[in-house]
Image (tube, helix red, strand yellow):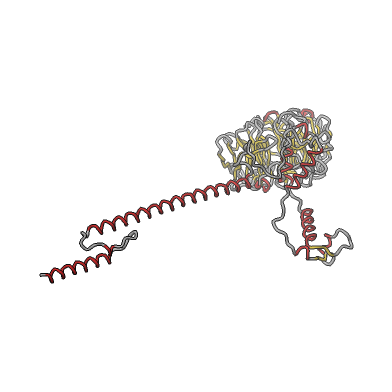
Length: 547
């Protein structure tokens, strides 16, 4: 019996030792020392407690990691936001970071004061202010990012190469250093390729605050619109990239508002709100299949008539913002409707047709309602008497007067000294009309005397030497503009009451280029001129108070 009991005890000890060997030791507890007589469930509870404690430690470490990751993400977001603000400030100035007063963060090199230039571009009252401004401008100049040490060591013989001889300052000069070579090349490039004046921010900011009186030029009488005056020459105001591409063929003001229309061979129609400062572009319309040769507002301001070298023309409704294609006209074979005039009452559109025909189209129905026939070819048209009469001029050198109520020619006479008529214009207030020819002669007539049989003009203008292409009276018939497309700066202004040409215009150093079209604003305060370079130049006439 004793032997059996001892064997059973040894077996229990073996089992217990196997269990202890299989179980891991937690928290430094040695399970091998556990008494064999103790119940087995006591050892299992200690292992469970160790596992729970380890799970708590792991969960705490995970929470700490999450909190640390969240802090890192927040710091990254803040840094990214700061970088974005820096980039926005560099690109757009202080648009997204307005100035906050009361903060001490200022540039080290900035001045502790500023000069108010809102009244005008007046020089500083004190010499010290001027010196401080010059010093600050010098300090704010951009420094070079890196310097090439080899430039000082290198020498170039500018007398040996033919194309480098222009860089010499003296005839005997031959060897120069690399840095001198670079600076002289840059100076030569700036001399051969001068920058555009309108792109200089300093000149624009100085002129933005000028008043009308400060910009007035007593000698010239006619100056550029306020806010865009140039130091050397008159400049253009329509300065967007696409405006510089347009070949200006048509330009006119709306009669009832400060709205300027500009169009050209790029098939775009552009509208500008003219204020003399910003001249904001309102809208641009693309005409797919018609390079625009002429576009004109109806006098009531409701529509724009657009024509080119096509059998058809377009009508743009300003109220509905809708473009309508009209034509070809029924019964007509004209391949071009590029020359037309609109009646002052907005009821009729007269197109120049083939073989001396004048096509009369209703502005409401856009249908052909009648034709008029000249003996020679017709080249220019002009309405008179509020649209009741029509004047025509053409290849036979005669001026025709038509009564549109009876569709009959009431008078025709030869324009003195004219072989081929090219331009015609009537005054809006006085009973005058001007006729131009291909010889550059412009005759001014009194219409009543001309109809009465007097063929002698009141005045003959001989200031142009090439074909007269365009004539236009201003709103009160005080100024007559005449121009020719065939010669640079061939644009003259005539003072109608004295029949004398303004000798101080165009200015001597101006770049009018080849003029194409011209129009005056309804109040006479602005004059816009389009040239063959694709620019529209806006001038302000200080004699008139209203635009």
